[in-house]
Amino acid sequence: MNLKTVAVQEVEMSTIKSNQISDEEKKSFLSGKSNNFAFMIGGPTLAVAFENYVLREHLKAIFASASSVVVFRASPLQKAQTVQFIMEDPEAYSMAVGDGGNDVNMIQTATIGVGIMGEEGAQAAQFSDYAVPNFKCVHRLLMLHGRTFGSKMSFLVGLNLYKSINYMIVSYFANLLNGFSGMPAFDMFYWSLYPILNTAFSQVGHQFLDQ
Image (tube, rainbow, N blue to C red; front, side, top):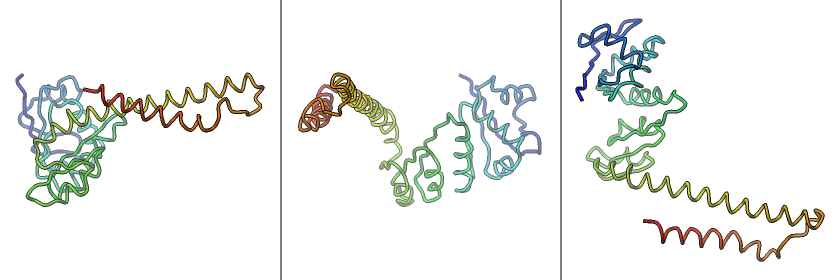
């Protein structure tokens, strides 16, 4: 795929200027019809764009349609503002990866923060949700641990709902038969065993069968 790189030189009050794209290409980018481009913008330019409503709307369209967005020479505050700007979309999730103290604001602003324990110190790792020893471990964190954690957590939530629903259904029909007298269907000792055994054995069995 031929990916066109768009670097922003300056901004005006109503538009984003770049000598590398034509007016027709810019309209296509802003409308979201084309995603065959990478967008680059500097920190000083980004600060001006964030202060103007029209430019913010342009950036939203570009960020949503671009294949890749590179923000360079950004301050720690601008990094956090960029993540917060992306998360203005209610359906957006973000993950920030950093290895230094200047990435702490960005890591704490993102939905998930990942800190890399590098030569710049351990500030990023200390303030992150997850810490990895080097950047190559991020792939394993996402594709292996993240995916398996999501699938196991969804199974656990479904298991607890199923267990609670069965518990309430038995109690409801038992009360129908005894005229809603409040008499328990089973002895309280067996009621206390039900959640313990159900939760323990089902999860242990699932772990044995899980590959």
